[in-house]
Length: 431
Image: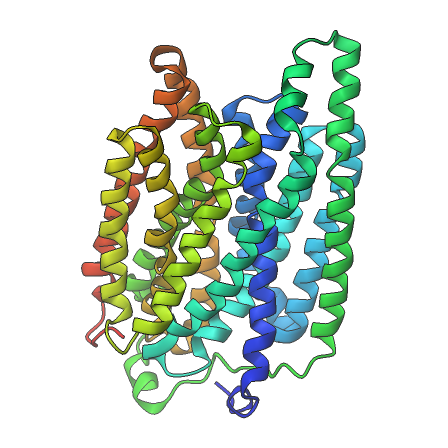
């Protein structure tokens, strides 16, 4: 990389931290949007989890265009472009709310995800390269605190507006005729307009500030002599099997993270917790992620390597999921919230392990990892589909609970990457 980031001290970290806050706030609004749109647009479980699909599928479809945008605009201006794209997606929520047409909401979410794909493609390699590789997970953990702290605030902020008095609203809705019901649902849908207009304003302002900031550029094509010699025979990104396995691990991890964060509100409701109370559960999951990130900052790499932290996280994910499936109501819900702790160090560890040794292939490697975020478009709807499929025979409580079996193979694959996969095709000690 260039020397500029080193000379800029704290400033680049503050700027990237602000961007990670934006990632978290916009992303973790989805946990509130799922139950909200389920009521406002009268959806089943599978349909409601298409919120996650529309949002995260953009990472798969836009990863390559994101790399092109960064090549054309550079990292700093590319980040500004990403923020404006997110603002455009948020603005689409206004006509979506006025018409109460679910596909328009999904379109807005897809565009927001597209903008985030650009931001992720720029910010994650930036913070990974901005310092020694052995402490990359520590730096990403610092960014994770910005991200997940925003995630703690987002469901509370949006939920206080769109889910206000929602239990009495649901009870009233059941007593209305068709015309009255439509009127009330239209009123509910309109609640989302003011919050998203405010989001648009903030995103545009931040985009302008980023554009005129002193954020330095980085050179991801630079390789030192040792790395250049090691990669001299490499002609394709597919010459790095550890990266490909890392992309798959990230695909599974993001699916698990979003299931834990986005399903816990509905899971609480399935266990007869009022929605007015259950809406805070997503913030609990994100709060545990913040605790995990703080632990990463303290312990990595001084007391534990990022590779060993990933092993511990995967094992904890398996244990908590098994307990959640078999434990009674409140213990089970607590275990799903605690998955935030298990998930917290996975992202910070997977990125540096997967990007290790890529040199001039770092940009395309980063794009592939961003494509892996599309796992969140696949696994939450599958969870919702399992809940719908099991509901008739098991009842809503058990259906929601046993459907968490979907998490077990996810965590086992991450454990494979943490123990074996990260070394595939490499002859160096992992950082």
